[in-house]
Length: 219
Image (tube, rainbow, N blue to C red; front, side, top):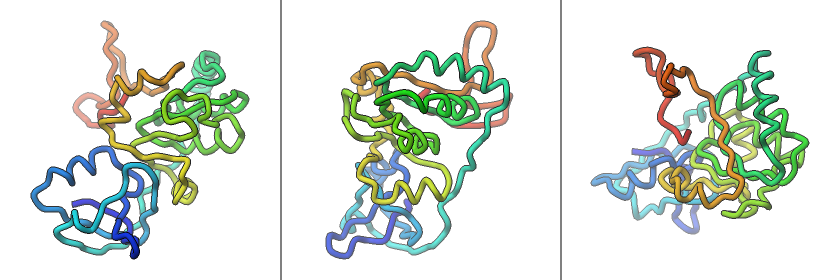
């Protein structure tokens, strides 16, 4: 069971909206497919189309798309971000994660040129960098001119910006996060936040003790 936009009346296609981490893979392998049509979902480009012939049942709903507020970085995170931002060269392709440090880094990249995005999660800061001219996606070696991501989570402003935006391609998680695919991008830089690091150098970004904090991503 998955949520989609209302159907395009002429073509018979629904749209997965803001996520294709595993949705299409599940749909294509399920014995029974139930599509929950949400009139508030947005239409996105990429691998996000689902035809009515693929559905066994249709239900309707109208819940609001969940929002994720922008986290303002602390003073310590701003200092860390200064070191990281100096490592990002013009023309780099970025994967930017979630949290105070990635947000702080993004704020310091507004003077860079021709940055590109190939990322699991589309974040609010990417819109800011695009609107100030730092992100153009034109120096990417893979999917030139396109933001490539597998899901988006942010504010209503983000969803309005993404709606029917052909510059953003939401593609399958198993493709976007494939190390072989990622390696095709020249000057690829990944910026993520970790929770803990032990004395042997192992990094944890999923849990605090036995409490689940986040999920497995592409970091």
